[in-house]
Image (cartoon, rainbow, N blue to C red):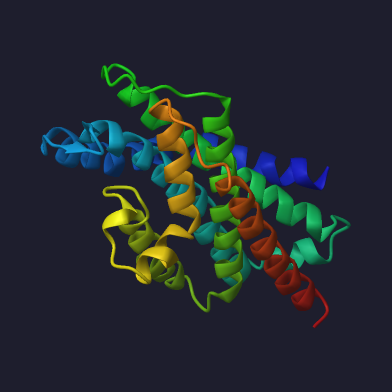
Length: 243
């Protein structure tokens, strides 16, 4: 019930801010598609650049959607509304609260990614998607929702959430196999970027879309990220409860 309650909170928030959330999910990715996809007529790996770009934008949208759904709200609830303190003294198991936040954030990321799929549907790109695509999108959203949860516990003020976005989410948006292949990044740094969750998600979604066999090693990589940050978030929240 605790998980359902948290997800219901996210749903209520989604209904309340539906137009704001939808426009936020559309504007930036759409501008990227227009400027880079339609404005730059080139090819990548033998494919039209737009075919390379769209899967990357889908992966990026699941990342930003899930991260933003958790980071700012949790920071405000913890620092100002003190809602987290009320949850800690309630009968709700804290692991259910954590899992509810992760699933709720991932669903918001899925919504953002699906909007991009719908927007690009009229474009005859020849890209294909499968249930595995949506699994990767959901796992990617869960990872970044968990990262957002951890960072919200580290936030000292409301202004820290935009800083986390600037220092973590924005660099990954541009470097992690979204707008250009990581193969072009110099060695050493390239391996680090390729190991990041967004790079793994972009690669798998793109391979599926192009009808290629995805490197499924990306799924256990995403699960490892999810497990690590879930443990960190759990430690943080239980440590605060025991203070």
